[in-house]
Length: 198
Image (cartoon, rainbow, N blue to C red; front, side, top):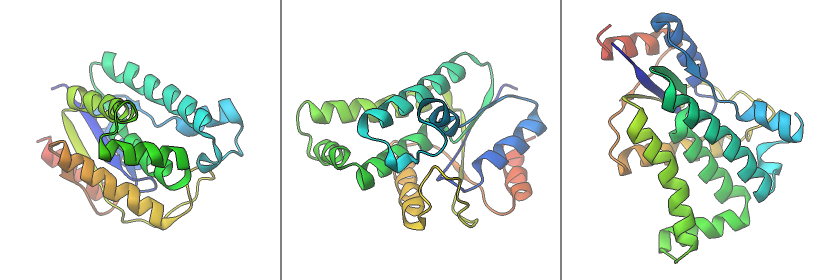
């Protein structure tokens, strides 16, 4: 059996821990969330996500998105830690909350303003299209653990919750079949293995 699995969730919800446990069990590679590594490479380790300007945000997004997509296109099987779906939810919420220009894009997308709406729609469809094509099993991790600051993403519970809410909206709006996994990391792993009939 070949597995192409996405572990999705807001930040600090245990996606990486779950991905590592599952990878150890199935002996398949993880496509890691490398946004923090690329942040360090591009801008230094002290820059927070919310401090990046629109151009810097786009550059960081492009590097992380293209690296993930290229890896997942060609690996015969993988576990996607966070996935393009989580990245879309985080990018959208951060942009709306902290970047006034991005908020204009978001409003234009919902109002179908020509040109600007098209750019926003392309941004969304890049993430959704990749997920539809390459993720055969999607497991969603809800917010159950305390928020652990990592010095990069917002140390703000309301933002983490908004990312979670938008991610769930994405999963429903675009018709993704997914399984909610909860409990301890070991309980989450057991749920996944049972779902995969392993």
